[in-house]
Image 1 (tube, rainbow over the protein chains, first blue to last red):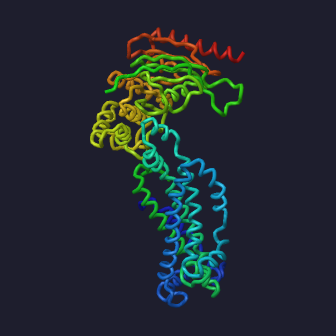
Image 2: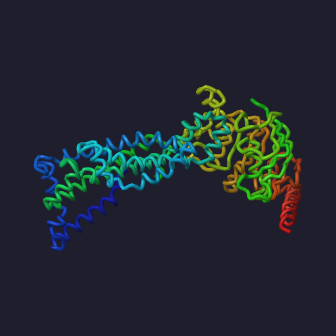
Image 3: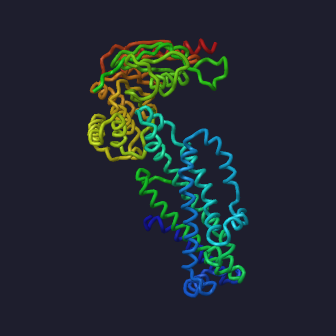
Length: 258
Length: 258
């Protein structure tokens, strides 16, 4: 993204922050409930340098959350991609699996929290499991759809060129499905960040989700907001990173709207 | 280079499993003999079965009755020296123009170097020397179809099956492509079956024009323009043949509706 493209969204962000600050200065917002951006900046420094709870620095929270999200996400992707390819390529498997997939996708991940604690204890495992669970169904349904939605004319072309079945899968269906698989990977990552706050509610005080909950009990709306902003920023950065990876992986889509 | 092969269509009928019983067949027993290196156009309104017939010759669809022989051998599936050019968007978007063509060449056993050399040669033949490294999305519709023709030729096919290859192009590009196709066909004699809904296009290109009518799909008229190429649109003979084809289509339409 060049400077000219970055300008309009930055301008909007600045305007929103300024309006917020002005509303607080005018006394329309109670600082303790709705702290202004200047207060948040101070809280951010406090969090970064002294930590909240004391000694739990922002970096500690970020690293813990990133590790959980990435672990759950990567496990989910590693399982969902091959499984989705298999299901998508086989009409029989697809018919068998489609109600299961629809069901799995519909389960609100956090409703599994009690079970996750029973199954995996209270350490890292239940958190990674919940994130993985949420990401898995999003990824799986997208990979299946990606394979099923491959343009049939490409398959007909491949068959008319004597392409061996193995190559039809590896050299035609797979690259043809890649853009939708990549879109699914981005959506699944988003799901990981939706789940993390809930997953960190129990059994830890470290992690951005835990931080948000902990701050609430101390009536520190400012810390809650800083935590939220950090989750947003990390999600944004990782999504941008995936975007870069996509461009590398799919040079033929360069300059195209995704 | 493989010479064109004769095509024999013997009593080919086609019904789809989804057709209601009693509905007229898509194709109702078509007989057609196409000579080696002949250029035949299939003309008719939408639904007359011309594309279905082409697909059956290509082996991409199976006949409900009858059979197709190419060079005396019964067609049982796609490939095997039957080049197909589709209406549009059948190039692999993730491969450059040269690699799309090389894909076909590799499938018939050429090694990478030979395939690349053939791709370069065929790109030159279709007038696209400069576009070797371009992806399909970077090419205009006309250029994409040139690549598609080159890709089909890379199979060194005995027959070339073209399904409304210029149907999606604007008229100016379309006219250029017709001239281009004739030039390529002069250079690489193949048996060509060319499906079109444009009577003019059929008259400009083909040795023989087969007019099909729907419900059930069948041949209602065959004629040979018998004029040297390139033909001029203003040619009085073509105007007369144009009328004759129109009459056949109109009469049939009136008869089946009555």
